[in-house]
Amino acid sequence: IGMGAMSALVSETLMEKDFQSIVRAEGAEIANQNSKTQVVISGKKEAVERAGEKCLEKFPDIFVFPLTVSAPFHSSLMKSIEKDFALFL
Image 1 (tube, rainbow, N blue to C red):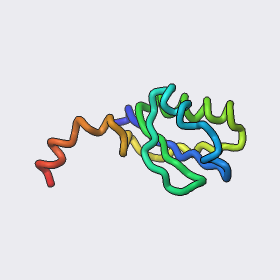
Image 2 (cartoon, rainbow, N blue to C red):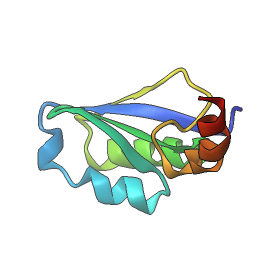
Image 3 (cartoon, helix red, strand yellow):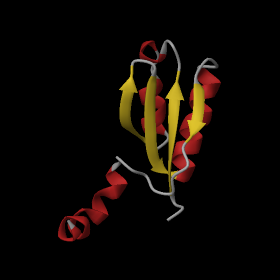
């Protein structure tokens, strides 16, 4: 708990920007595409923060909204709990 993070990236022209390469380069992942103007990124807290900062630097019209979560939901970092969660279900 506390090691993961998620942030929403929002821009009217989001899909016209190469934000995905920045997210990957910083070690975060695209967790969800909510709409043409909003995606959620996920991963280790430091990676998500760096990705958000780099996206802001390159694309000043992107808004970065950190989400109030303590885990990197919808990312490959959640794979380690799949077996236990399946047993729980």
